[in-house]
Image 1 (cartoon, one colour):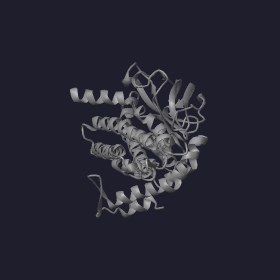
Image 2 (image 1 turned 90 degrees about the vertical axis):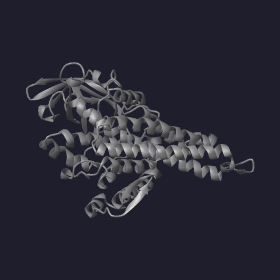
Image 3 (image 1 turned 135 degrees about the horizontal axis):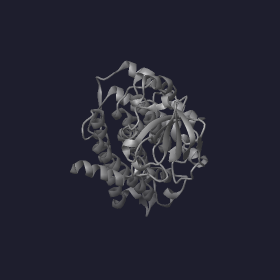
Image 4 (image 1 turned 90 degrees about the horizontal axis):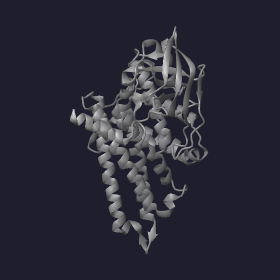
Length: 397
């Protein structure tokens, strides 16, 4: 297993390889190969058991951090890898082929850490980022509330200034890592109603007044904990506010541009794995005296799945490049990619299950877990209905 820091030091960029119609540098190919090897060796053999046992593989996450995957697009000053959003898409696509839920959790950790790196002050970056990039500390991102999901700007959690502290009251819902993570990057209202009244805070586990709900029982993503994060007169130092009052919602939306691409990449890698399992099964499974791959109905399914995956990959990569280049259409492109890729990849995985027939419905075959895990990707980081609203609003402005 290679080490990402070594690859970065070499900075090899002369040789190029193809990934769809995109050209990858030798460095990018090596990074993706390393992620793919890690997924094959350290994630895939355990994914089924982690799902059944609802086991959160913290030690494995820390191994991933050792390869630089806990701070992929963070600056190198405090241990980040200094890579691009395009590089991150390559990495998460590869990792999710081993375990969707574990790869997806790493995207959340990266997004929360990126917010501190991008918008925190020098003291906050020095204090938290070395712990986050090594995964000595695990991070969660807290935006959604029980009464404000898609309408995130309507959040009710409040933070009232009291001397050199803020006193927080309210709760956050569906928080990955809730109760287990060490650091919570939370959006809380400090001002008037609407997006401009929201501020961003870094809240450490163990802070008085911070508690957690029971672990949610979910359809998928079973190997990562999900719980409410509850603030009851939770006292957070003023020095833990990220940026100025009222800037939090803006930070959160900027984070979601990248988060949507990350989750799309996880969908793509999972669906690619499901397709490969279906292709293999179709060649081996015999009915009516021949391999089912000989039937045109199955051939057409496989052809459509392969075509859809290629289209999804191209859209994801293009959106990642647009975000890296800071183009004005970056938010629209991210929403387009998230909507198209997650819908498409869920359908591909579902078709893979169909090709497996009754066996695909059994836990002995991993495609059923892939379908369960992928379903939530059409909901989180903004539902795909909200993605359509973002796209339409940008088109009509």
